[in-house]
Length: 58
Image (cartoon, rainbow, N blue to C red; front, top):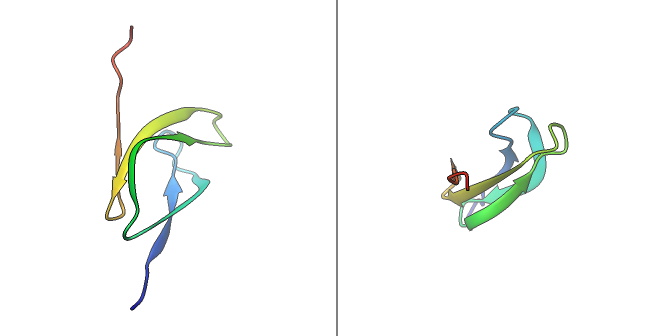
């Protein structure tokens, strides 16, 4: 069985981050930090599909 892994890319600047996910990885409200643009984004990931969670401004 081949386990596929992929790098997680920053949704803001599209650069590879320091995180990898596999096909069975499930992330909920994960704070993804980008070392290039120095921003943090909340993401969800399931089956190598990443969704950006937008929070309403308080």
